[in-house]
Figure 1 (cartoon, helix red, strand yellow):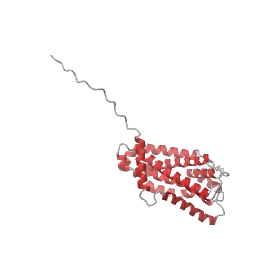
Figure 2: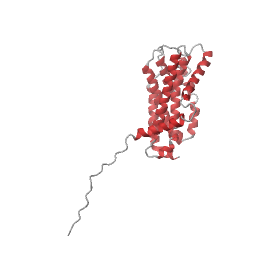
Figure 3: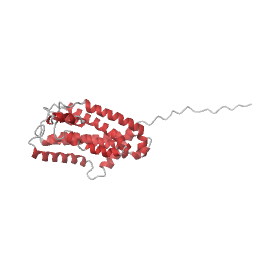
Figure 4: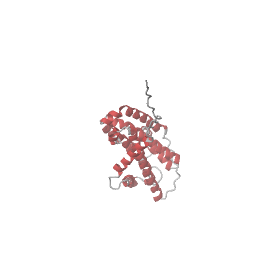
Length: 272
């Protein structure tokens, strides 16, 4: 009785490896989309990112030059207000954009290749680079225009940027969950955030504030980044009330809890 042998199988084909660089491709695609939608459709595009802070700093310098003989540090009004305003703007702009990241990219979250972390990272990286470039151009322009001879303390400048960026991603990540899960929180946050421009030290330094109010002011972590930035530009300013670990700790706690909540509820949020 003839027996039929089982057909021979060819060598096992290696399993297709997971697509490499998926995270970077997703983030890059989301960044290109935001560049075209946010800056590509408006007249002037990226010029508005420069015009807005220049106009704000010029207005502050013009108004307060009539009220005060000299700013809180030095004798150059534009430099004093630029170091405060640009640091504050870095925080407020980034935290707001990161908070809206999931709503902005909700249509793309239906694809398995795109995750909520891709949306957060894409918005943060693109707008952080934009704001930092604006900061370099504006501050460099002021130094060149007024021919200022500054002794820059780069560790303080980079420390201030690091504190502000970490705080922006922490607040933005937590609000990304809260805004989408509890829409009323966005209005409440808007009300709570209105005095931030005044209590972050944009107009003054903490040393000018009475002691009983200074302690409350320094509970605001943004004020630490603003004061540290000014320490980097003014060689005679020591910023003794700055505690670098405080804003970093606040940022770490907010980022961890924000990511945990988003990891738990991001599917429900995306389907809303």
